[in-house]
Image (tube, rainbow, N blue to C red; front, side):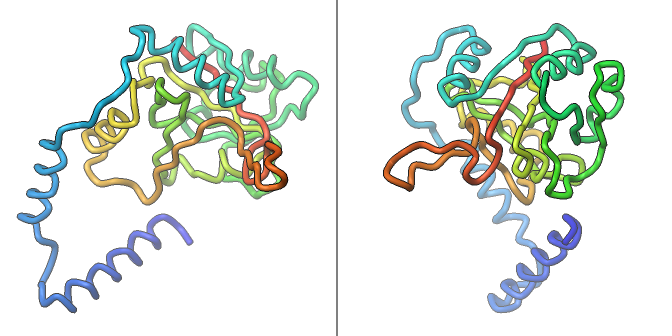
Length: 218
């Protein structure tokens, strides 16, 4: 099912709810009141973070078993990814956002397409990142499919340093300010997939990527 199909399904469900409530259409006044309530709501206590959010993010990402590399410009990304993949399959899929990068010169065969489920490496960006917890935030859309970072064994995320925010409250505020309406899915990802269900032994890659590598740009 495509994102457009999901949107139509959502609107059909909401239409049935409105009919049951005796309403004729979206209540703009109620929606505005809800947005005003959220905007005015005071945040709870938050920890004090260091001024260097990038370093804090790197430290917390390492705590979550992610590895990191830092480059100066976006053009430096393919070489950094090639160094990380040294000895691993030199093929990957990526989001359209990074189609113009010179992957071939770096020796990586990159397809710009959704995953088929058999791809070893998925390369993505992110909507933003959270320094407090070392977390990546993804907002789904046609050009930012969630499967690219959920299905491959190795996930490489390209993070611009200006995308690193202090806390999750800031991430949701940016979503509201830049998107207005939340996308179909918002994913918060902290390191590789893991579980401790069996004898409380941590196993990586149980429900998603076994490896997460972050390339910081800036």
